[in-house]
Length: 547
Image 1 (tube, rainbow, N blue to C red):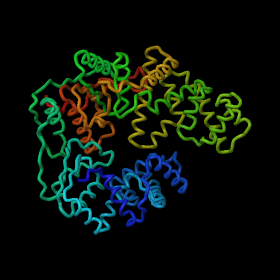
Image 2 (image 1 turned 45 degrees about the vertical axis):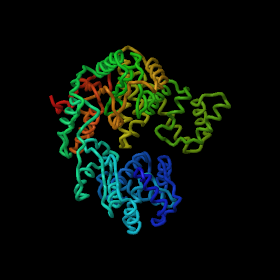
Image 3 (image 1 turned 180 degrees about the horizontal axis):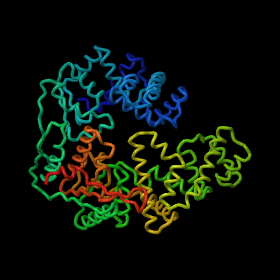
């Protein structure tokens, strides 16, 4: 038997038949860096500006379009995005350049295999005849091109067995289409549905809660989970007065658990910025923890960049901080220019800042580099008075002036949105320092110390992760924090399909637990300033749990 992912199977087929599509059999598979590099060339060819339509965003849109089986033309036709004409033209040139370079990106592998099997009957019949039986796992996570590939491979024998759970379809943002599993019997007439309803992980209380929640979704086949393992403990809901109180409750509960048991404990959350206060609380109690599939808060790139901006504005002669942010976001100060400045700084034993100002005074740099550095120097100098404001306001002011926030907002990607939320949380952390009577030096020092201790015991029994990263895992005890409207369900999930996916995400979180679940939320959320609170509403999902 052949055991394979969709992508590795596609590579296997394309290596033999790529010539039929105009590619060489030695085609290159382009990784993320290759794609970015190629898109930079596309932007140069089309005279597009990264600051207007960021390359990162174009790459994400192209990937999403491919996962939906779209060509540049069909993407343009079906998109309401005002930037769609620009992205479509970049998409078209990007595909042309990929083919000219005998390259395929990750998304192309399945798309081109589907194209091959669609256009060449003999090739399709060969593979469909070769594989008499098809077994597919996690069918709820398949996208449109993967479904079309399966249809081609099942076209001769029609023997297909798919395992999946529509209630765990949580990757819509990656192109997964829940309709693939919902319409399975229609796509493959004569299919027999076998419901695997006995659960070997969770207690009946947990299963009843999860089933009761997800039964509010319309897009599902339905099932009744049961276990022979007994009823188990009740689910605890903890309403905290504030985010700090929520983190304190969770950390102290974990501390008590660890006195009596060595069981693993998971803390799950919808978005990464929610880990910050919990990490602080766990550190205070000296509880070892590990982040799964993520980076500790103070080690995240955008957090380090923001802190470097504060340090550089406070002290422009801080070479390390200045070098980190001089071209972040991109402002046309390239490696060649920086190397030249560094070399001169070393020779004269001057700081990088001094060297830049001397180069500007002497007009020693080419026009474009001179102009970019002149703007950068003006930015740093103009930001200095902002430091007289309260720390949280100073941080917000510096980030706005730098263009960092605006650059992330233009990307309009899931990753960029996560980074913006992390920066908002950093401002909240700064506000907490103001409330405690601490200044900028304390804030920067504490952040540096936290970052320096981010390598935690990899055998730690406490794991922090997003709900998405928890899929497929199990833990004796689970905390789901941030169970509030706007967080779970996420504020961006306003359409019916998105709301159902958020509910499925909560279902996945509940069913990670073997013995005990805590659901926590804060009655108040702090927004941007330490003295401003907004009331928050408990997640609607809490009310949907059976009493």
